[in-house]
Length: 235
Image 1: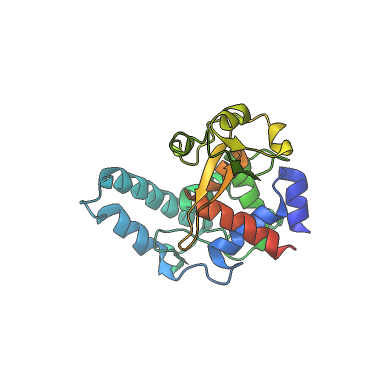
Image 2 (image 1 turned 90 degrees about the horizontal axis):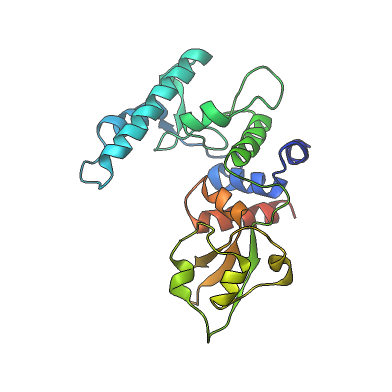
């Protein structure tokens, strides 16, 4: 019922929200057992300096640490008591403190936001996160593709990675056959490559909504896992 309400109010399908909660925490079964305070302190002040983006990562995690402490103060929680991932993500949807601050909502109406125990709050907060990151209600996540071997420009198509950059007409000019429903799509598309170990890679044309899923985790495999798990879980 809560998934249906979130779809009505936010336009994010139950399968997508369900897929996120399944991939992130196996539907709440494993939310992490690392001290969030320890994780954020370590990443803030002892991030490996050999990393090419060490300074930026230091700054990011110090911001997360400050937000975490502020959340604990407001909610009267002991910061040493909270457990999460090795990176400091918390709760059923594995929100970082800044995401908790910006996108978490009270969706069960009890007057508090609790992503650690409230499934309703987790569902509403994931839907709110997607709307804030460009989810368009009613838009498909991807389309199947076929290739014209004579005109295919695979390097050009894959250059933007998972960022939608091509119109349907441009993709077809670069050697991609798209189904009829894709040709009615007005937005930009990305050619998504999904390598396989023992057989040729799979490919799909990802829409802006596929890209929105990757804002949760920058990975085409992550997005497709969310889509496929969510559909299977609700089948």
